[in-house]
Length: 319
Image 1 (cartoon, rainbow, N blue to C red):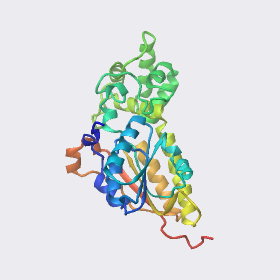
Image 2 (cartoon, one colour):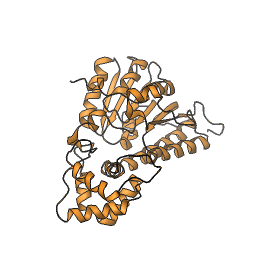
Image 3 (cartoon, one colour):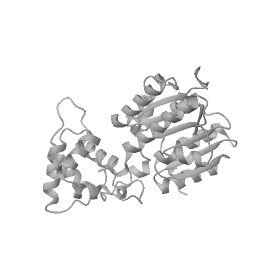
Image 4 (spheres, one colour):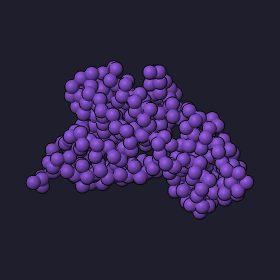
């Protein structure tokens, strides 16, 4: 195994360990295992009596993370391939109650840096963007197949791109001549159609939001997050009343988001769980990277960690 974990730097590691507070013998579920960086750090804390459940859409990275944690810790390791929206059901199947859940919604460095995955336009590659290579739909199929209005709506909804209609029109016009096949080709058309960024706004590449929208759509990221959060809400309610749940009483749930489409629903759901009396937020404001971490790992700049703790004791109205 190549030690890609030595290259990949997990974001907000100190915050994750401080807020999840792993203890010996606990059960930890990593909803987005990546290359296993967060999981390995937690495994060191929970020790050989602990259990680590690794989940990921990327089968290759899941295998690498599993090998890393097994080789460097004495924990029992369970690997789950698929969307993290299915993770709670798999935990129930394994008859596991977990003490910690972490979902890092970013990407492993090997995914971002590999042009063949087509996740970014930094290197010219195929318009793929699938984290699970067995997935049905690629970004190329969306770009070349959606109606103009569908493409515009997708770019606006998932990319929050104000120039979505202009971009969609340019894409449809160009694809009449020849289909889009590479990330570089698409990025060039998007940049030309979107024009320069509005004055006073942060200068990001004009193709960034369109690529974000396509990646989210291809991998069903928002739907999966909404499903996971709803299952956390339901499990927290059960645990708080003493009913059986895949979340143990006192369990801590953390989500690391990288843009507002991810962070907003996490914030709202955690607030709702707290207001219902089923948990308490351990982060009133999200934990973020300090300048030292940003200097070492620029990808941490936009990371926001929110953590919720399921009530440690049953509510007064528990039956």
